[in-house]
Length: 198
Image (cartoon, rainbow, N blue to C red; front, side, top):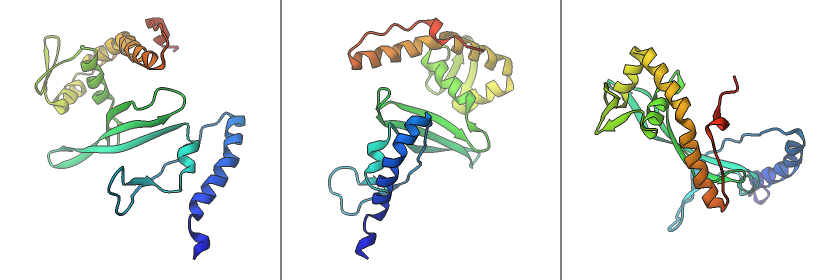
């Protein structure tokens, strides 16, 4: 039985040592999906660990922790999940950023939900309490009502999308300034950097 202790971790370490050179030469990306287990009897620190030893954590350039925050329901029926993705390791960009988004069953990531979130961040949509307004237009009470409004009025959704694309550089330039400050360098971001290539 002793020869099987840590076998998975040893195999992962050997495989990753061989893979890293090949991945680099072929300019490819490899995605590993792992699960969390809980260590028994942990009094301090995080009891959650990933399977397969420490090698994968060491060799990975980017590690993202994806978790369901809440279940989205409509009339008692589950229609999707609110999901949080947190970058826990990043060798190529600033780490520890978070994103929240809706994953709808049968649809994927909700475009309208993302547009509403970005509209609020860019002050294109005003949120007071649980009510959403876009200028003089009252979208509805709650995100679901606002999403339904845009489903019923696709021309308004197109206007919002155009406004987000127009103003998105403001959001990105702010994030770039934060990242540059953390890295100790200056960055200049203009709207020209984000024009559509198509």
